[in-house]
Length: 285
Length: 59
Image (cartoon, rainbow over the protein chains, first blue to last red):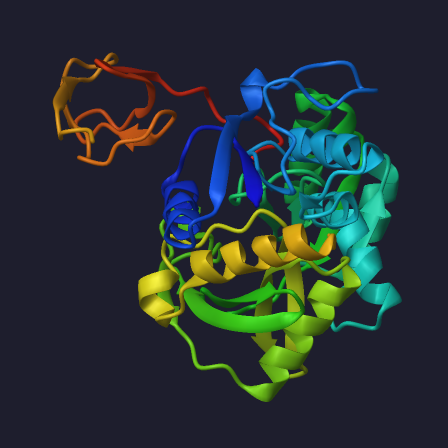
Protein backbone atom coordinates (compact mmCIF):
# COMPACT_ATOMS: atom_id res chain seq x y z
CA UNK A 1 0.00 0.00 0.00
CA UNK A 2 1.20 3.51 -0.79
CA UNK A 3 -0.38 6.80 0.18
CA UNK A 4 0.34 10.41 -0.64
CA UNK A 5 0.27 13.59 1.36
CA UNK A 6 0.00 16.90 -0.48
CA UNK A 7 1.01 19.90 1.59
CA UNK A 8 2.49 23.39 1.43
CA UNK A 9 5.70 22.77 3.29
CA UNK A 10 5.78 20.57 6.35
CA UNK A 11 4.22 22.03 9.46
CA UNK A 12 4.22 20.28 12.81
CA UNK A 13 1.04 18.44 11.78
CA UNK A 14 2.48 17.06 8.54
CA UNK A 15 5.62 15.98 10.33
CA UNK A 16 3.57 14.15 12.95
CA UNK A 17 1.54 12.50 10.19
CA UNK A 18 4.69 11.41 8.37
CA UNK A 19 5.90 9.78 11.59
CA UNK A 20 2.53 8.05 12.01
CA UNK A 21 2.66 6.55 8.53
CA UNK A 22 6.25 5.50 9.09
CA UNK A 23 5.28 3.75 12.33
CA UNK A 24 2.62 1.84 10.38
CA UNK A 25 5.14 0.80 7.73
CA UNK A 26 3.12 2.49 5.01
CA UNK A 27 4.87 3.91 1.97
CA UNK A 28 4.26 7.65 2.09
CA UNK A 29 4.89 10.10 -0.71
CA UNK A 30 5.04 13.69 0.50
CA UNK A 31 4.37 16.10 -2.35
CA UNK A 32 4.55 19.88 -2.14
CA UNK A 33 1.51 21.40 -3.81
CA UNK A 34 3.72 23.95 -5.57
CA UNK A 35 5.23 21.13 -7.65
CA UNK A 36 1.90 19.77 -8.87
CA UNK A 37 0.90 20.47 -12.45
CA UNK A 38 -0.38 18.65 -15.49
CA UNK A 39 -3.13 18.00 -17.98
CA UNK A 40 -6.47 17.74 -16.20
CA UNK A 41 -7.22 14.58 -18.17
CA UNK A 42 -4.20 12.85 -16.68
CA UNK A 43 -2.96 12.07 -13.19
CA UNK A 44 -1.05 15.07 -11.83
CA UNK A 45 2.64 15.08 -12.50
CA UNK A 46 4.80 14.99 -9.37
CA UNK A 47 2.17 12.93 -7.54
CA UNK A 48 2.73 9.16 -7.66
CA UNK A 49 -0.32 7.01 -8.40
CA UNK A 50 -1.06 5.97 -4.84
CA UNK A 51 -4.03 4.30 -3.15
CA UNK A 52 -5.20 7.43 -1.31
CA UNK A 53 -4.03 11.01 -0.98
CA UNK A 54 -4.23 13.08 2.18
CA UNK A 55 -4.82 16.69 1.19
CA UNK A 56 -3.07 19.03 3.60
CA UNK A 57 -2.44 22.07 1.44
CA UNK A 58 -2.68 25.37 3.29
CA UNK A 59 -4.63 26.69 0.32
CA UNK A 60 -8.34 25.98 0.21
CA UNK A 61 -8.50 26.37 -3.56
CA UNK A 62 -5.59 24.03 -4.16
CA UNK A 63 -7.24 21.38 -2.01
CA UNK A 64 -10.50 21.82 -3.93
CA UNK A 65 -8.82 21.56 -7.33
CA UNK A 66 -6.69 18.56 -6.44
CA UNK A 67 -9.60 16.73 -4.80
CA UNK A 68 -11.82 17.13 -7.87
CA UNK A 69 -8.94 16.28 -10.19
CA UNK A 70 -8.14 13.04 -8.40
CA UNK A 71 -11.79 12.04 -8.00
CA UNK A 72 -12.40 12.53 -11.72
CA UNK A 73 -9.54 10.16 -12.48
CA UNK A 74 -10.69 7.54 -9.98
CA UNK A 75 -8.33 8.58 -7.21
CA UNK A 76 -9.15 8.78 -3.52
CA UNK A 77 -8.47 12.19 -1.98
CA UNK A 78 -9.05 12.63 1.74
CA UNK A 79 -10.98 14.69 2.47
CA UNK A 80 -13.29 14.36 -0.49
CA UNK A 81 -14.02 17.43 -2.61
CA UNK A 82 -17.49 17.86 -1.13
CA UNK A 83 -16.11 18.04 2.40
CA UNK A 84 -13.37 20.48 1.46
CA UNK A 85 -15.67 22.74 -0.55
CA UNK A 86 -18.33 22.80 2.13
CA UNK A 87 -16.01 23.45 5.04
CA UNK A 88 -13.91 26.01 3.19
CA UNK A 89 -16.90 28.22 2.44
CA UNK A 90 -18.76 29.55 5.47
CA UNK A 91 -21.98 30.02 3.53
CA UNK A 92 -21.93 26.42 2.33
CA UNK A 93 -21.08 25.22 5.83
CA UNK A 94 -24.03 27.04 7.36
CA UNK A 95 -26.38 25.76 4.66
CA UNK A 96 -25.16 22.18 5.11
CA UNK A 97 -25.68 22.38 8.86
CA UNK A 98 -29.14 23.91 8.48
CA UNK A 99 -30.14 21.28 5.95
CA UNK A 100 -29.40 18.53 8.46
CA UNK A 101 -30.84 20.40 11.45
CA UNK A 102 -27.48 20.62 13.18
CA UNK A 103 -27.59 23.37 15.82
CA UNK A 104 -25.58 26.31 14.55
CA UNK A 105 -25.34 30.07 14.89
CA UNK A 106 -27.81 32.08 12.87
CA UNK A 107 -26.11 33.72 9.92
CA UNK A 108 -27.06 35.90 6.99
CA UNK A 109 -25.55 36.92 3.70
CA UNK A 110 -25.73 40.16 1.78
CA UNK A 111 -24.40 41.17 -1.60
CA UNK A 112 -24.35 44.95 -1.29
CA UNK A 113 -23.94 47.59 1.41
CA UNK A 114 -27.64 48.51 1.73
CA UNK A 115 -28.67 44.89 2.06
CA UNK A 116 -25.82 44.37 4.52
CA UNK A 117 -27.36 47.05 6.72
CA UNK A 118 -30.73 45.31 6.58
CA UNK A 119 -29.23 41.91 7.30
CA UNK A 120 -27.40 43.33 10.30
CA UNK A 121 -30.55 44.94 11.67
CA UNK A 122 -32.29 41.58 11.43
CA UNK A 123 -29.52 39.79 13.32
CA UNK A 124 -29.00 42.57 15.84
CA UNK A 125 -25.80 44.08 17.18
CA UNK A 126 -23.22 43.01 18.13
CA UNK A 127 -22.58 40.63 15.28
CA UNK A 128 -19.57 39.16 13.52
CA UNK A 129 -18.58 39.77 9.91
CA UNK A 130 -16.46 37.04 8.37
CA UNK A 131 -14.91 36.48 4.98
CA UNK A 132 -16.65 33.61 3.21
CA UNK A 133 -13.26 32.05 2.49
CA UNK A 134 -10.48 32.28 5.04
CA UNK A 135 -9.25 30.99 8.32
CA UNK A 136 -7.07 31.54 11.39
CA UNK A 137 -9.27 34.43 12.50
CA UNK A 138 -8.11 36.73 9.74
CA UNK A 139 -10.43 39.57 8.68
CA UNK A 140 -13.06 38.49 11.18
CA UNK A 141 -14.55 41.50 12.88
CA UNK A 142 -16.93 42.03 15.77
CA UNK A 143 -19.35 44.74 14.72
CA UNK A 144 -21.00 46.60 17.57
CA UNK A 145 -23.10 49.13 15.69
CA UNK A 146 -24.12 50.53 12.34
CA UNK A 147 -21.04 52.75 12.08
CA UNK A 148 -18.71 49.81 12.57
CA UNK A 149 -20.65 47.80 10.01
CA UNK A 150 -20.31 50.56 7.42
CA UNK A 151 -16.56 50.55 8.00
CA UNK A 152 -16.36 46.76 7.67
CA UNK A 153 -18.34 46.83 4.43
CA UNK A 154 -16.21 49.67 3.07
CA UNK A 155 -13.08 47.65 3.85
CA UNK A 156 -14.46 44.61 2.07
CA UNK A 157 -15.22 46.71 -0.98
CA UNK A 158 -11.73 48.19 -0.90
CA UNK A 159 -10.12 44.76 -0.58
CA UNK A 160 -11.84 43.63 -3.76
CA UNK A 161 -11.75 40.08 -5.05
CA UNK A 162 -14.60 37.74 -5.79
CA UNK A 163 -14.87 36.31 -2.30
CA UNK A 164 -15.52 39.73 -0.77
CA UNK A 165 -18.55 40.34 -2.95
CA UNK A 166 -20.48 38.23 -0.47
CA UNK A 167 -20.80 39.44 3.10
CA UNK A 168 -21.33 36.77 5.74
CA UNK A 169 -22.80 38.03 9.00
CA UNK A 170 -23.16 35.85 12.05
CA UNK A 171 -24.78 36.32 15.42
CA UNK A 172 -22.23 37.19 18.09
CA UNK A 173 -22.20 34.86 21.06
CA UNK A 174 -20.62 36.00 24.30
CA UNK A 175 -18.44 33.05 25.28
CA UNK A 176 -16.05 34.66 27.71
CA UNK A 177 -13.23 33.96 25.28
CA UNK A 178 -13.81 30.22 25.20
CA UNK A 179 -14.93 27.75 22.58
CA UNK A 180 -14.70 24.03 21.95
CA UNK A 181 -12.97 22.20 19.17
CA UNK A 182 -14.02 18.60 18.59
CA UNK A 183 -12.10 16.29 16.27
CA UNK A 184 -14.20 13.88 14.26
CA UNK A 185 -12.62 11.13 12.19
CA UNK A 186 -14.66 8.68 10.14
CA UNK A 187 -17.87 9.72 11.85
CA UNK A 188 -16.55 9.37 15.40
CA UNK A 189 -15.64 12.16 17.77
CA UNK A 190 -12.18 11.16 19.00
CA UNK A 191 -11.13 14.13 21.11
CA UNK A 192 -11.93 17.69 22.07
CA UNK A 193 -10.17 20.71 23.45
CA UNK A 194 -11.32 23.95 25.01
CA UNK A 195 -9.68 27.04 23.57
CA UNK A 196 -9.44 30.08 25.78
CA UNK A 197 -8.33 33.56 24.97
CA UNK A 198 -8.28 36.96 26.63
CA UNK A 199 -10.12 38.32 23.60
CA UNK A 200 -13.24 37.11 21.85
CA UNK A 201 -11.35 35.27 19.11
CA UNK A 202 -10.25 31.81 20.17
CA UNK A 203 -8.03 30.72 17.30
CA UNK A 204 -4.88 28.99 18.52
CA UNK A 205 -3.21 30.59 15.50
CA UNK A 206 -3.79 33.88 17.34
CA UNK A 207 -2.42 32.57 20.62
CA UNK A 208 -5.44 31.02 22.35
CA UNK A 209 -4.55 28.32 24.88
CA UNK A 210 -5.71 24.73 24.38
CA UNK A 211 -6.70 22.36 27.17
CA UNK A 212 -7.99 18.81 26.89
CA UNK A 213 -11.71 18.35 27.38
CA UNK A 214 -13.65 15.31 28.45
CA UNK A 215 -16.22 14.28 25.88
CA UNK A 216 -19.86 14.45 26.87
CA UNK A 217 -22.77 12.88 24.95
CA UNK A 218 -24.15 16.18 23.67
CA UNK A 219 -20.77 17.31 22.39
CA UNK A 220 -20.24 13.97 20.69
CA UNK A 221 -23.68 14.02 19.11
CA UNK A 222 -23.50 17.57 17.80
CA UNK A 223 -19.94 17.31 16.50
CA UNK A 224 -20.60 13.99 14.79
CA UNK A 225 -23.79 15.37 13.24
CA UNK A 226 -21.87 18.40 11.98
CA UNK A 227 -19.23 16.18 10.43
CA UNK A 228 -21.88 14.09 8.74
CA UNK A 229 -23.63 17.21 7.44
CA UNK A 230 -20.53 18.42 5.60
CA UNK A 231 -19.87 15.03 4.06
CA UNK A 232 -18.03 12.96 6.64
CA UNK A 233 -14.31 12.38 6.37
CA UNK A 234 -12.26 13.95 9.10
CA UNK A 235 -12.93 17.44 10.37
CA UNK A 236 -12.47 19.72 13.32
CA UNK A 237 -15.75 21.15 14.56
CA UNK A 238 -15.69 24.48 16.41
CA UNK A 239 -18.58 24.98 18.83
CA UNK A 240 -19.86 27.44 21.39
CA UNK A 241 -21.38 26.45 24.70
CA UNK A 242 -24.64 28.37 25.05
CA UNK A 243 -27.82 28.27 27.10
CA UNK A 244 -29.34 26.50 24.12
CA UNK A 245 -26.67 23.82 24.15
CA UNK A 246 -23.77 23.42 21.78
CA UNK A 247 -23.93 25.53 18.64
CA UNK A 248 -21.60 24.82 15.74
CA UNK A 249 -19.60 27.83 14.66
CA UNK A 250 -17.36 26.45 11.91
CA UNK A 251 -16.15 23.13 10.53
CA UNK A 252 -12.56 22.72 9.32
CA UNK A 253 -11.52 20.19 6.69
CA UNK A 254 -7.75 20.55 7.05
CA UNK A 255 -7.54 20.34 10.80
CA UNK A 256 -4.57 21.56 12.77
CA UNK A 257 -3.85 19.56 15.91
CA UNK A 258 -0.33 20.36 17.08
CA UNK A 259 -1.71 21.72 20.36
CA UNK A 260 -4.24 18.93 20.84
CA UNK A 261 -2.26 15.69 21.04
CA UNK A 262 -0.54 16.18 24.36
CA UNK A 263 -3.47 18.10 25.82
CA UNK A 264 -5.99 15.35 25.04
CA UNK A 265 -3.73 12.31 25.25
CA UNK A 266 -5.25 11.15 21.95
CA UNK A 267 -3.03 10.10 19.08
CA UNK A 268 -4.80 12.29 16.53
CA UNK A 269 -2.21 11.87 13.75
CA UNK A 270 -2.24 8.13 14.31
CA UNK A 271 -6.02 7.99 13.97
CA UNK A 272 -5.86 10.13 10.83
CA UNK A 273 -3.24 7.77 9.39
CA UNK A 274 -5.41 4.77 10.24
CA UNK A 275 -8.39 6.41 8.55
CA UNK A 276 -6.43 7.16 5.39
CA UNK A 277 -5.08 3.62 5.32
CA UNK A 278 -8.63 2.35 5.67
CA UNK A 279 -9.77 4.55 2.80
CA UNK A 280 -6.88 3.35 0.67
CA UNK A 281 -7.72 -0.26 1.33
CA UNK A 282 -11.46 -0.01 1.00
CA UNK A 283 -11.70 2.48 -1.80
CA UNK A 284 -13.73 4.87 0.34
CA UNK A 285 -13.42 8.61 0.45
CA UNK B 1 20.12 10.43 9.12
CA UNK B 2 20.45 14.17 9.42
CA UNK B 3 22.31 15.85 12.23
CA UNK B 4 21.11 18.96 14.01
CA UNK B 5 22.68 22.02 12.47
CA UNK B 6 22.54 25.67 13.43
CA UNK B 7 21.77 27.72 10.35
CA UNK B 8 21.73 31.40 9.61
CA UNK B 9 18.33 32.98 9.15
CA UNK B 10 18.11 34.31 5.59
CA UNK B 11 16.00 37.22 6.83
CA UNK B 12 17.79 38.53 9.92
CA UNK B 13 21.02 36.49 9.98
CA UNK B 14 20.11 35.16 13.41
CA UNK B 15 20.78 31.60 14.52
CA UNK B 16 18.19 28.96 13.60
CA UNK B 17 18.35 25.52 15.15
CA UNK B 18 17.31 22.75 12.79
CA UNK B 19 16.01 19.53 14.39
CA UNK B 20 18.05 16.37 14.00
CA UNK B 21 15.19 14.78 12.07
CA UNK B 22 14.72 17.78 9.80
CA UNK B 23 12.74 17.03 6.64
CA UNK B 24 12.73 18.56 3.19
CA UNK B 25 10.02 21.21 3.09
CA UNK B 26 9.83 21.53 6.87
CA UNK B 27 8.76 24.91 8.16
CA UNK B 28 10.81 26.43 10.96
CA UNK B 29 10.48 29.66 12.89
CA UNK B 30 13.35 32.03 13.49
CA UNK B 31 13.29 32.81 17.21
CA UNK B 32 15.08 36.10 16.63
CA UNK B 33 12.94 37.77 13.96
CA UNK B 34 9.87 35.53 13.89
CA UNK B 35 10.12 34.75 10.19
CA UNK B 36 8.76 31.45 8.95
CA UNK B 37 11.47 29.59 7.08
CA UNK B 38 11.33 26.63 4.76
CA UNK B 39 13.93 23.90 4.37
CA UNK B 40 14.60 23.80 0.63
CA UNK B 41 17.56 21.41 0.64
CA UNK B 42 18.89 18.83 3.08
CA UNK B 43 22.50 18.22 2.08
CA UNK B 44 23.64 20.76 2.84
CA UNK B 45 20.68 22.33 4.59
CA UNK B 46 19.37 25.46 2.95
CA UNK B 47 16.67 27.76 4.30
CA UNK B 48 14.59 30.39 2.61
CA UNK B 49 11.76 32.58 3.80
CA UNK B 50 8.47 30.71 3.49
CA UNK B 51 5.73 32.13 1.27
CA UNK B 52 3.48 34.76 2.78
CA UNK B 53 0.05 33.70 3.94
CA UNK B 54 -2.54 33.91 1.15
CA UNK B 55 -6.20 34.82 1.43
CA UNK B 56 -7.45 31.24 1.09
CA UNK B 57 -4.94 29.68 3.48
CA UNK B 58 -6.12 28.07 6.63
CA UNK B 59 -7.76 25.01 8.06
